[in-house]
Image (cartoon, rainbow, N blue to C red):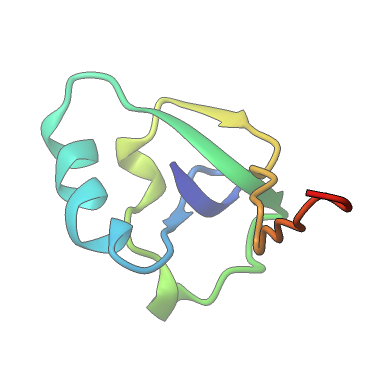
Length: 79
């Protein structure tokens, strides 16, 4: 799962995903990528691209996960 991709398939990963995912994309016969955001071609800085688009066969846009940041538990009244 990549963070951003442009329309040509150039990928940018977040945090630790940039260590493992680019190597797997170049090693596979077919590469299908799930991304959070697709931006126009040319809007990504070439120095930030982790996997070039020549290794990407298909791009699928996903919706970001909704995570619980903080959970509070109250005691019941009268207990």
